[in-house]
Amino acid sequence: MQKKPVLYIYIFALIWLVSFLAGIRLYDIMDVVTMIIFSTGVSAIVYGGSIMSQKIRGVLTTDTVDENADSPETQNLDSTGNPEVDTLIEEAYGFLREMNNEREKIQNKDFSRKTKEIVDISYKIIKKLRHNPQAIFSAKQFLIHYLPTTTKLITNYGYMESQGISGTNISAAMAKIENSLDTLLDAYRMQLDKLFAEAALDLEVDIDVLENMLKLEGLTNSDADMK
Image 1: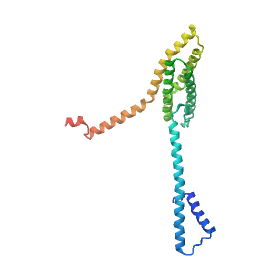
Image 2: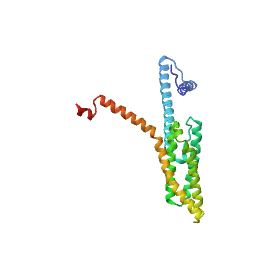
Image 3: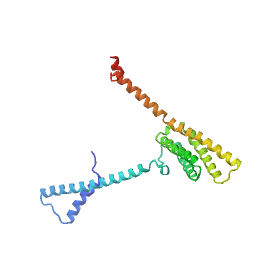
Image 4: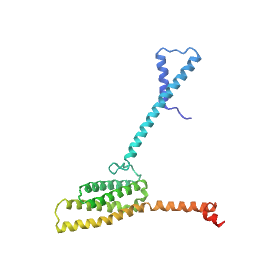
């Protein structure tokens, strides 16, 4: 049998205690019934108000979390249930914060734009991994090698740009990093697309099953034409 909420019982008992201390006496059965009805009604109102208040606070809290859930600087690092994945994701966020900070210092607009796209794609990749930790094995190289190396390249580019000189070695190194950024950007796009490959395959299977069922039921145009 389900127990009454503790708060409800406390309120009910408190009303009777206060009534007794106030000198209210119950002389017949109707007085008792009236007191029970009154206590029950007040307890329900107070208890209901308390529950509603908790729900409202819960909704407001949920809305606040959801509003900031996708913000790169306010990622909620809830555990995925896999310590290895949690560690890799936490390190990845660190690289992305560093990459984004370096990007803001870079004067080359085109280079900065490409870097921002890499950062944005990376956050989408990590978000996908957090929702599906099993996919970590197909993105391990991305987390262990691509992100650290890309961060290093962008940091070095920013440092060389800040020197304000156009020496042969600096110019050649910066040009090489600029060229490599296009290759890296394509790789990041492919990595994100790769993570959706399994989902796409599942959808394809579902569609094939649905189309076959429709054909068996004679609910497709092709079957109608054959008849």
